Length: 334
Image (cartoon, rainbow, N blue to C red; front, side, top):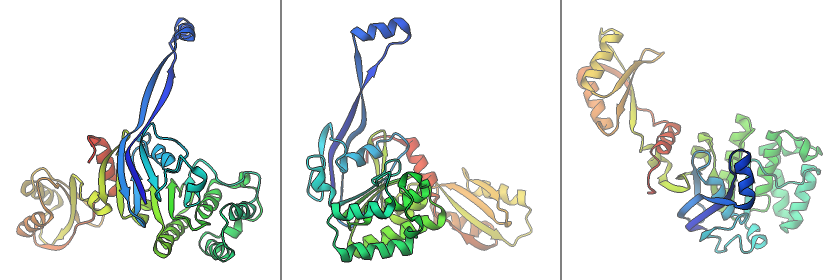
């Protein structure tokens, strides 16, 4: 459904000299520099895939999405969406796409949301049965009727994002590009948005490419992840595989021996060298150990050997911390 082949996007910027003399000199002898925002990105997503495309600010995420949606033309390389190069025939390609950009509206600024939907219905030639079905769904999940006839420009950010999300799915697109779709939404509406796109994926086979800094969106919506840094893909795999790249893992345990807290912490650090140990609010002990040095079964065996363990829990690695580690590593693409 989506294919990027050695996709490159460079921006040319004008360099101005410093001070009055430098400013005057550049009037007659201008110099430019090229900045590569996307650097030979390649990936392929099959129909129905739910993929997060994530990275730090300035990593090249939004630029990639803009090329995939036809807003920008690649400097070199090629991308295909549903078998078409979107920047060569934007109007035809747009019929199969739903797009949300957190800072850019697809609605008519001076019209109400219902009026914008009526225009979109005609632009996309949406059958009445599909249009009415989707409106019922939006009333139920997004409380879209509460927006009334207020012009879009007078809506709050959260209200506008509800309308943008609904508009992106109104015509049952085959592929959806969402860039920070839940910005400005409260927790209840975030959950509704996640359920809505999951419903579209399950019932219609909608392909989803999501860029977001919200870890909740990533884990609830997507099953695969592409991590980009400095314009290059540096990690790809499932969400579970991403969590498995954590450099440290944790175990929480309790024991029934008469050891004091400090004595317990000292013993843990002794039997698991390189680990950090601390006391939780509920009285249990937390062990953070380097995953390169110990496996989870090995840690459990060591704890059972040295303590009368009463309970033990190994939480999944915090995905946000894992992503932060990957950004910090930021080496070659994988």
